[in-house]
Structures are given as C-alpha cells and as structure tokens.
Length: 378
Image (cartoon, rainbow, N blue to C red; front, side):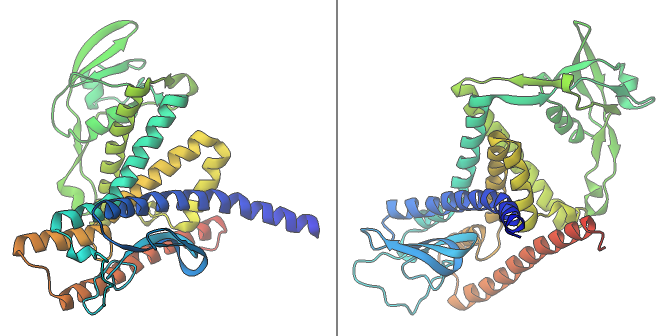
C-alpha cells in the first residue's frame, strides 16, 4: 500500500514539478516586465502576484508592494494603485493615498510601455533561452537532403534528383529543411532559384511551386508544393555550434520565426480552418512539460522558450483585460485625444473576460478530447 502511494506521488510530482517550473518562470518574467517598467516611470505598485486565488504566502518590500504566491499557479498579475482589480481596469471612484502615482495618471506613451513590457519580457526570455541553448549545446538541423522526387511535380520538372541537398533558395543559404518549407509554401506560382549539391557539384535549378488550395477562408491564400520528401533519419541531422554573437542572432531569428508561426496558427483557428487538436490546455502542457523534462534539460528549456513566446503573442491580442486590449484602448485614446468613457471600458472588459473564459474552456475541452481518445472514451 505504501509503495503504491509513493509511486503515485512520484508520478504526480513528475508532471507537477516541470509544469509548475514552466508556469512560475514564465509568469514571473512577464509580470516582472510590467513591474520594472512601472517602477521606472514612478507608478505605485500595490501587489505582485504569482497565481490566483487564496494566498499561500506574502511579504512586503520597502516600497510597500505586497508580493504574494497564490494557490492556483495558472497566471499572475501586477496590480497598480488605483486599479479596480487585477486586470488593471481603472477605478475612477478609488481614493488614492497622497504621494501614490496611478497608472492612469501617467502620459499615454508611458502607459503603453508599461503594458507592452510584459509580452516584450516574454520575447526576451525566449531569445535568451534559445540563444543560451544554441551557445551551450548547439542546435540540430534536418539537412534538406531529398529522399524522393514525385513524378510530374514541379521538382521533377525542374530536374531535381533523389540525393540532392538544397543549399540555397533565392540566393539565401539554407541549412534546415524547415527553412526550405517556409519559402516554398509561401511562394505558390512564383519561380524560385535553387542551388543543390549533387555529389559535390553545385547545380542551379529553377522550380515553380504548384498552387494548392487550403480549406475554409484560407482558400484565398494557396500554399506552395514542389513534390519532394525529406526523411528525418539520423544521418540527415547536422549539429551546428555557435559563438556568443552567432547564438544571439540565432535566438532572435528563431523567436521571430516562432512568433510568425504562432500568429498564423491563431489565424487559422479564427477563420475556421484550424483544428481544436492544435489548442493545448493545462493538462496537455503539463504532459509535454514532463516529456521534455524527461528528455533532458535542453529539451525542457526549448519547451519553456516556446511557451513563453506563445504567452507573449497571445497577450498582445486586442482582447480587453489582456495587454493587447489595453494597448488598443490607448491607441483609440491617442486618436480621439481623450480616454474612452468608463462605462464603455467596463462593458469592453466584460466582453474580454467572456472571450478569455471561452479560450480557457476551449483549452480544457481540447484536453478532454485528447485524453478521451487516449482512454478510448470517445
């Protein structure tokens, strides 16, 4: 009985520890971006919270900011003096102590920087983690070595052969098949100049990706295909080592590429051509956190970098209560030369809360479907 209990606790800890590590690190960095920028501009911070719900522990710093760790670790917040709640909605009826500085009293540009600092901190964390991993252990790339060429497809017509290694596209060197895919899929119907290594000889080819219609509203934006396959075999992977400067460049480049991929993924969901399987709730994130942690520290660090980037992108969506919603309000204020009416802001916040709760519900529903299939319930 004791052995069974210990085994169960060990299993739970195997999921919980990586998930909490990921969550706390990302939330802390995000909120610290808001916090430090607010302090820089002199805004009074009432509370810095990791998690929501009942408070587990708290302390006060010399500025009387209440630092708290709460029971539910699925997020966090920085609460400024004069805020109605943790979403930083201003409370026009709140009496502020003498000497305290509210967020709403600062110039528009300062408020925008304070709000944007959270997602920017997530992006910087992603760059730091990717660059650090590249510098310490290097990166592994799938060499674009062609395994098969489909008959009568653009690659075949261009003269590509099995065994060719694509070394450049449109005068841009490529070392990973993902780079080749990104260029080809975005170039439907456009002729591309390609250089391949064929047995030590460099051969220049011109290939025109065919136009493949995508489902749903994205049918207006076809994707490109040339008809080749590349297999992820051990001999097709190449390890690349980086110096400090090269590693930073790699981190910035990969962060940008991941941000674009996240935006495209959100777009496919909005227009109805995506899949609910692409949405991950807390259960799925915990499961993948365990798997990546089991695979090694570098795999886990890369996973943290990816989630940090996703959190930054999602928070920039123009949904009230999210950072992007605040920035949208500030943009409108800049155009109108006056802030929105409190009643309008309050109404928008209620809509934003509903949208966010729906997104959270979608993540939990996706988790339920995924685990239901695993357990053969559905």
